Image (tube, rainbow, N blue to C red; front, side, top):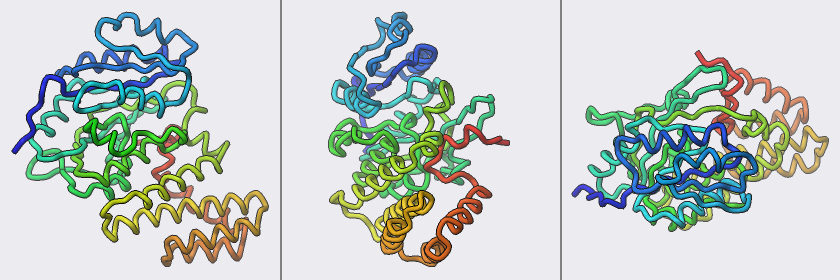
Length: 342
């Protein structure tokens, strides 16, 4: 039996911090939706620029929640807790929705049974104006029974492989509360962390049509790729924390799901080991390297273990050179900012 959608269906949560130049476009893209949301909540995370002035033309149509600067996760959590809709959709203050984004998602949701969340494809707009398709860059495509979407009763592997953006998500509010909301101790990968925990709770639908424009604006030093270069250990530690947490979540995971988490955890522990070698911390690097191997013993992890354990810094350099010849790994999503996309 399909879901019946009430008048209080969708609350839209938009966190913002010092986005005076883009928040208006983001809000306008929500207010122009062909499927009108029940409410739009903009959480100002202690902006010090003219962000609040930029929101004045929309004051009659939105709810503004102001808080001291606490980070994007705290801002999103504040929006979720204040929301009155049954479903929550997210948008970042420098991105935009296509006009039929909510209509498409809610149409799929209303035709589905016991659906927990719906995510869509997105167009990534680089600073040079070039655009590329997110799902295609991941090597993913979703079509089923002549429709441009596909449902997954066990979506964790798809979430891990695709790593969708939070701006494309529409999810049951009660599921967000059950999952524990965003982890405010994380400044990196907080969206992927929550999406994975949600994926352990129930079914997802993936819509193949790009319905969100992820716009690379502002200071490039805010991007994850820049942070990874300047504070690698912090980025690595937060990913390790996320995957360890995921393994500790009480849920009926399949063997393949557990091994997929362990593989990613092993990969990030290996990144930590490589970083220790590069810093000249050989003894610590070897201990962490052994830990990475035990997390996910495979021919590939054994091969990289041998290369780094025997060659040290030279081995790390060889592996990094090999990686540069391939596409950026999924966690460095903003690395696309500096690439030429054909």
